[in-house]
Length: 155
Image (cartoon, rainbow, N blue to C red; front, side):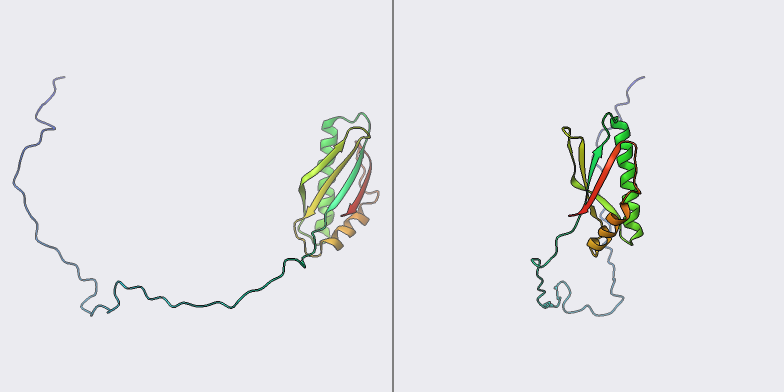
């Protein structure tokens, strides 16, 4: 292949200046006197006062589980999922918005085989009453192979 040196080279050529092209977007109407100036009214809002100190703390559901000795981690995990689903369903049946595992939701002590799980309500309005109903509805209805006992309280 042989290169063509004619392409890519610049040569002077005559310049053609096009006539000015004007656009009239006002359609013949006079332009406003404030064109280019910003005019916006200032509206002062009334003072909004509120008190955060009177807010009640959001209750949470604390469950202390006693695990069966020799329970495998897989069985414990599966039972914890089942327990969460059941307790969450109880809270939903009380017209709540469900339970959310707390950020520091799990504490386990290997000495005595107990574990504590904490859940907070998604809707804090009326949560203390709903969680109280959840605790009373739990009683002996929640039995799982890896859990010997489950004590629940509203904290």
